[in-house]
Image: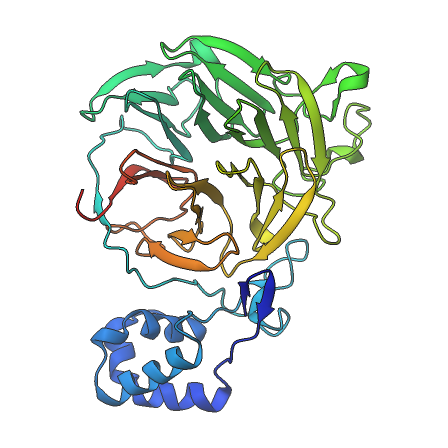
Length: 412
């Protein structure tokens, strides 16, 4: 199925007989193009390589794509059919016994991949990057304690600045990062439960939350704690939104005797441009307008709507700027990160599927960039928070790999 205009349209699936005929007709192509894959993974691999297939195999795969309207098959999203038979038991129950299929979309947008930035040696992935108004790229890296995590590179791709632990402390789970209209850099530490503001010249300006003390934000009590902050987004009017929570009641602080954490739900915190607390709303998982996870957040530049990525539930939940529910968009991929391009089009990063997907406002995929999961050219172990430049080139790290990929728009 695919989200379309707020409704859900059922698409035909390939039955056992069809898959058997496919495997027979495509045995040589599978051996040549789909090494090490099995089950539904082979079916997806063939769909992605349809132009390279031979004779009878190409006919079978082309018929399958035509039946599915050109949309790749899937087995692990809630919109793919029976989640029990597909081997997915839901985020709170764990992975089933069957293969977890990668869902990839055909690349039609003509982007190319370059790697012009050289990061300092050392282990650790890059969960997020951000661009300032001068075209400088800021990089937030996961590294061992005592080694720098925040870097600034110039438009010439050369390192300008390193911000060390002596300035910002050490993020035990470096996560999201963004830059505001004043070129201040905002970084999230999900584990130590802080959001920090760093000046353009690398000085610590502000810390929201108390390092090492997760808890609920209760403005009436003067209790201003964070709980797994994962990403920050700014609205055109300067309002700030903090997305909190990899999942409801994880890491289960509500089971502890700490009175500072009694809710434990994924949530969004809303502040005005001066940092005044305005509002918060919760996931709670159940029913329309709810979310289990708030791993992604982006603000629609045209109307200020708040887009939330509920990663493990494969859905985007959209609210007004003041937290009123508007709609839910069911997706075929993990919703790891969200962003809007300069024309106001929504995009999402598909995490372990290794792609960046251009969407319409109803969640339909319009185009894809990325060669899937891996460490080869154009591949990502986990595609996550990224940024556009003024020419719609994409700059992205990889949560599990210490490198920066620049995806260059055609004709640029």
